[in-house]
Length: 143
Image 1: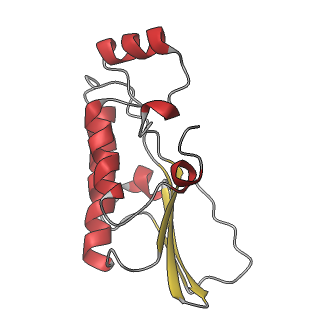
Image 2: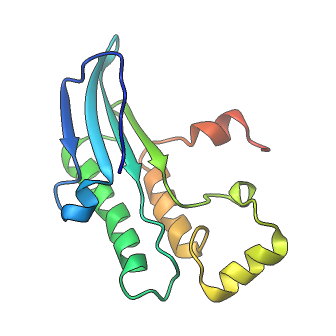
């Protein structure tokens, strides 16, 4: 599950995405917080790991979770609204995010193990193309 701790009382809190099944309800908290520049929406998620590309349920569920989140954003928000998406995304968006060594990386790709498959990176690219920035990578481009 996920938790979201704030000093200020949220304006609204939603558990799960509108299309979520019971398991997915425990994987996302969405809160609206009042800030000096307007309402900030925070999506705090525990994104599915997916296991491997060939898993009959886990990998498709991971892709669906990302698609559901993007559908939620496009239906309820604008790319120009203040939004934070945070949590355990379970995707290494760039090679700099992979810490398992080159040989293990090649083996994981060869066997379809999740975390940095091209399909997963496409999911992350879709998120970032929604006028979002990987703040860690922006602050630490070479780390």
